[in-house]
Image 1 (tube, rainbow, N blue to C red):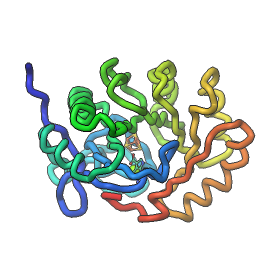
Image 2: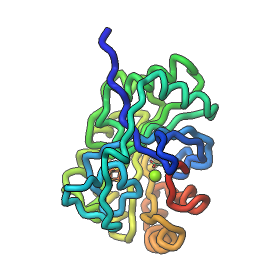
Image 3: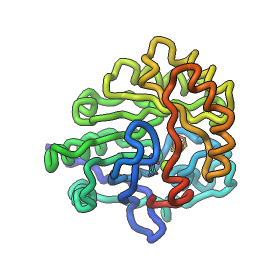
Image 4: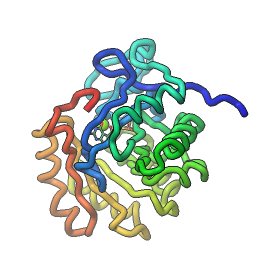
Length: 248
Ligand SMILES: Nc1nc2[nH]cc(C(=O)O)c2c(=O)[nH]1
Ligand code: SF4
Ligand SMILES: [Mg+2]
């Protein structure tokens, strides 16, 4: 058997790998206690991303509202699978959220991790946050309980095709739901066009914002249109509870 490569993780405020226990702040599992593991690296470059320290490296010309560049040597760390698993299990939450960055940039590592979690504690829910641009391996679809897919609209600053790519890669996967970051009414119209044929019960609208004021401002603009179209609405609870900080 070939050994699985180390996981590349983001770094928390104390300089350690960003694995933490919090309430799921977004989507269908909001309010539930989860252990989060944040992987480093992303293939997209959203202007309003709340984790630019996973991808906005020095020497790149990606544009982000913060205007801050990060050093991969400082912001990326490695853990082997047994060590990552041990830390995750020790937090003793009923579920695990694998997030990033874009976790599916490390497909073998994520598959091995999901299998290891289920092999150790079959009762734990394994949930994966992804931008949808990488189709998941069939074995990962088996191992994961939920894919929370967040295809990006134009205001993210990415190529427009990442929206349909994210939807098409996960449309036929039963345990996938979609979460769209929205900041204005027209975003909801765009989502309803792009998700045609998908049950609206699988679609979540989430306000853009990295503080309560920005969230409220987005919510004011999107709530009624979301209700009219029959989509679910989710807040970003952790931002209100803890602010925009690492390890929360
Ligand atoms: N509490 C909490 N909930 C979250 N849901 C998705 C998150 C993410 O960063 O992907 C996240 C996060 O960073 N914190
Ligand atoms: S896809 Fe997610 S992690 Fe990547 S830049 Fe966009 S918001 Fe950030
Ligand atoms: Mg986050």
